[in-house]
Image 1 (cartoon, rainbow, N blue to C red):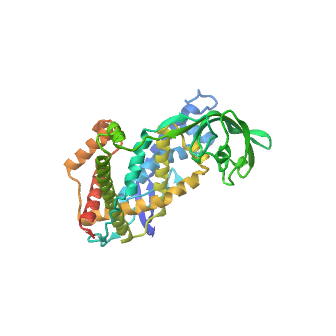
Image 2 (image 1 turned 90 degrees about the vertical axis):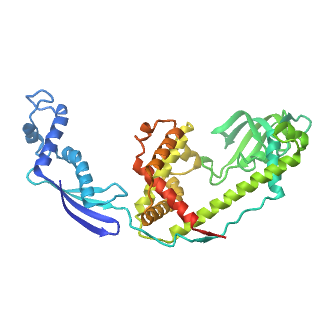
Image 3 (image 1 turned 60 degrees about the horizontal axis):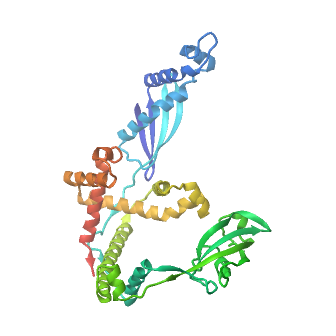
Length: 426
């Protein structure tokens, strides 16, 4: 390989001119011939036994060139990028400009490189820490959660159903007198007022009693995810089979002593207040950290390639796909029911992706400015933690994560702590 030139054409964009020598290209052509000859039939020879010269005579001298170039350009480009001292943030674009046995291969490689950024004024940032006080309403919500855990479901048979009741129904939907897909169910439990169904559906059931069979008229929303139903009027036939309601226990000392580790309602309230105060304090700390990091990004200067934002957004979509797969779902089904195209889904992540890329670049520059490093002990400890969290051995983890990457993450974490420790918190 010969790196002939390195040309900076734009900020963070370089063009490399690379040549693969004739002898190296000849070796690649011979390798392509050996790899593909078993597929080639030439009259007078058994399949796979035809000499290379005869094949090239029959099909043209360049018959194996494409495979040969594909075989060798990857390592050659990697070596050229390394020789040029470039750190790439995206796969390079390769254009083959000339190919021949006499001159070898000439390529033009376009590279997008990691941007150079400047970060200043990241120490001594002034910030206010606002801790939300605990109100009586907050404690009441904690009591309501406890009450919800002990709720009883009782059957209602002496009145018509009301909002808040849970009804068991059979239903089937019709558009223009024809039943539509997905519009039918039996023994479906629906809490009236939950908003689980389209507007108007649940309200139309209110006032009916067990045993009634009736019809309700509704109109699907204009933005409904199923195109053929969007904005369309529909009729649902309903069979109301049962009605039940929630019966909550009285909040008193008896409930507290029977369901918690406390003996009295006052003791529970005191503990709830303490925990809420701790949670509010932690939330305030998180808000302070967010503000500080936002200021660091604000104080960063540099031109960042759009491809970095694009790549991060793609990664976030892939992470979503993995989470869905763990739940037995897939991305295509998710997009169908959320009414989003692949491009729209990616767009929803773009703002977050942009912020993450900028923050990482800023923090890595702080690491460089301050000469922050991870110790061998810190790297080993983190590798062990990652392995334990994923129920794998350290050796297995090293197949997916390098110690160098772990060291970078540790150093970035130290940069965050430096910014926080030097901040002026009011």
